[in-house]
Amino acid sequence: MSTTTLRITGMTCGHCVAAVTAALKAVPGVELVQVNLERGEGVVQGSASADQLVGAVEAEGYAARVA
Image (cartoon, rainbow, N blue to C red; front, top):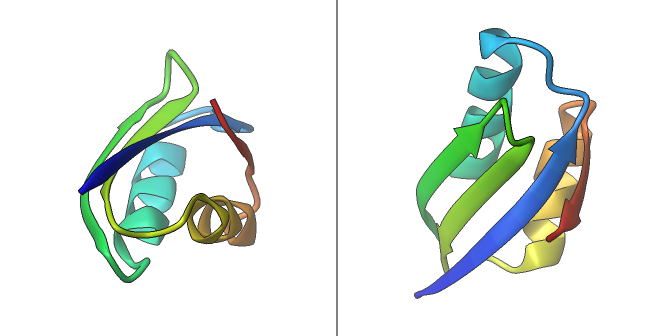
C-alpha cells in the first residue's frame, strides 16, 4: 500500500472537503482518505495511481497536483 499526498486548491468549506473525500474514496484501490481544508491537502493510502486521484479531484471541480 502506498501513500500519495495531493495539494488541492479551490476548497473553501466543509462541503468541499466532503465532496473531495467522496470522490477520492470512489477511486478503485483507495483504502484511506484524509482531506485537510486548512492545509489544502489530501492524503490517500492504497493502490490507486496518482493520475487517477488527481482526475477524481478535478472531476469535482477542484485543482490538484501531487505534492
